[in-house]
Image (cartoon, rainbow, N blue to C red; front, side, top):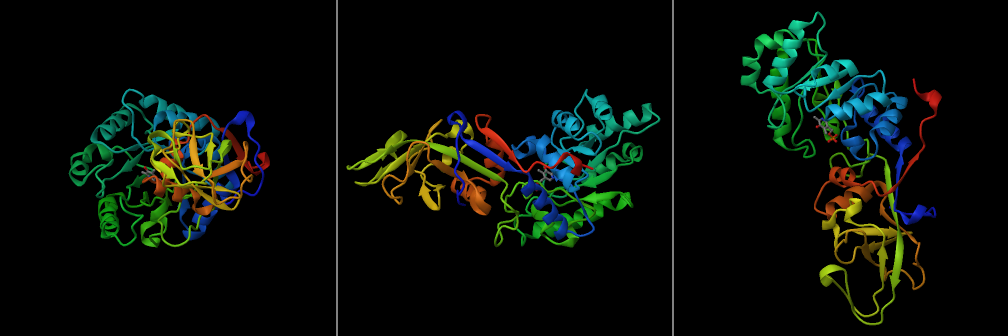
Length: 375
Ligand SMILES: *Cc1c(COP(=O)(O)O)cnc(C)c1O
């Protein structure tokens, strides 16, 4: 996590840079991990906060052929950027909006008896069937048909021929958790009725559980965005996000100081503090106050005091006097471990850090794929 290139800030705003080549490289890395298996791209929540249209275009240029979003609206928005690849809508078939899926060529992932029933009714009314996927609950108790619902929905299910049957792993980031094997075995049993239909179980950490969990198609999200897939060993993924913010003021006190709301950081005499123009209104998790670190050049500087709405204190005493000035760039997220380190310090996960990143940043996309590379 270093900041070597100088950063100039447009209108004093923090800058969020997204490296699209790193996203493509992470996708290829996952493909190499899972030979012979289709690697889709999960771009829900606006591409984990990084811009689904840009992310998906970069993935498509790299060779990705299947995309997943959470909601119908996300699917409709993505359809404009990705005109002719399958887009699956994970949160099911929204009641009353059934026609919008077929009009936009979106594939709902049916998870409830009602989803299945409404989809079957459409199939009865039309010569052509609505393209759909089916999600099974194999032990996470989130979305998906359980064994009993599957049995009850038999007649409706007979009217659908799903393009994909899938389930989701609850504990893939804990490779030794016996729940992984249990879910996989239940998935195999529950999908037996759909011989020949493609199957999908693995998210990012699931890809690394081994070949038995990969089935026909994997659905990575966080690993594409540079998050460590399972926290084991060095992060195999390339960093995607760089977040820099400007120093607004430097305090060079001779006496002891208290920093920020509540004075929760008590710095001894001679400690120096920088105030940085980024806060929780930008999506910087407030719980990172007093626990996370940022980088100024090659130096780690700890967060000092609580994170304010628009401001952050840093203890810059490790840097020589005069090294930090108004306008000095501070790297809040960067490098292979920066995202996960910040998340851990804030008591959360990389997913939440990314999806909270707000609209106040200047957003920069690096290494956009050339137009001709989109096939
Ligand atoms: C979010 C999600 C994914 C992607 O998970 P990651 O852990 O980000 O790789 C895959 N499948 C489903 C059903 C999801 O909800």
